[in-house]
Length: 178
Image (tube, rainbow, N blue to C red; front, side, top):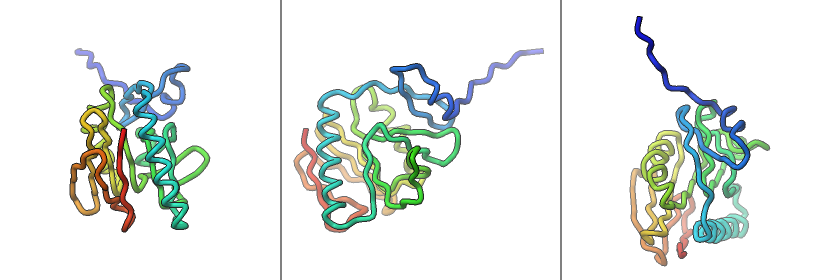
């Protein structure tokens, strides 16, 4: 009889049990380990978070913004757990003390050399198929922002310093700079 090796399927419990100092995300039962973000990554994340927070606050918006590390149980199952760089959630029923259960409305990932494959391919597919309305990839190496509006089925590419319309908010534009 032949012995067939099967690939281990990981769960959220495995993510919670990673050794101290290690972090990862879980997609379809596969663990993807994450490197710590660098200075430019963090600067962009803080600037965008600040702009989004101020827009929501100034317009008495119902949405909430969270920066990584923030748990998103993407498909509300035991096999998908991500920590997007920035998550905007407009349905407060998805939120509890553990994080967001279901797809955020808007996700921003800041691509770094170690995360490019994940951000441009794996997460793009996962976010598209899970109900995220809008997904931005901010690429500071290429000095561009790729905006995927899944509701309208459009993709736009913007250079840093250009006004970028936010699809989930009418009349809100942001500039990304490093």
